[in-house]
Image (cartoon, rainbow, N blue to C red):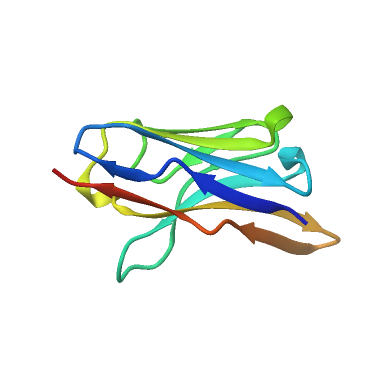
Amino acid sequence: QVQLVESGGGLVQPGGSLRLSCAASGRNISIYVMGWYRQAPGKQRELVAVITTGGRTNYADSVKGRFTISRENANNTVYLQMNSLKPEDTAVYYCNARRSVAGTLRTYWGQGTQVTVSS
């Protein structure tokens, strides 16, 4: 089992940048596909970015070219660099870890960190 703790959220003006961190404990993240999701008020949780165990990345269309996901397995940490932030990026951002074990998908979530983009 892995525990996830997000940090780095806050209030930022449009056009600004933030870097979110997701610190893991319990297991090394090298065996997990790691992702960032977000949930805005009144909306469903959506995928923002994912990075595989091999380092391949995938992004939601709405953040392509602005956000970058990365992982440091040695530090057991995943990052989300967010640039050119827009008001519509305002949401609670959640870190996710998942892996398939004997055909069963096991998924873990952090508690979330609030990102507010506003002037």
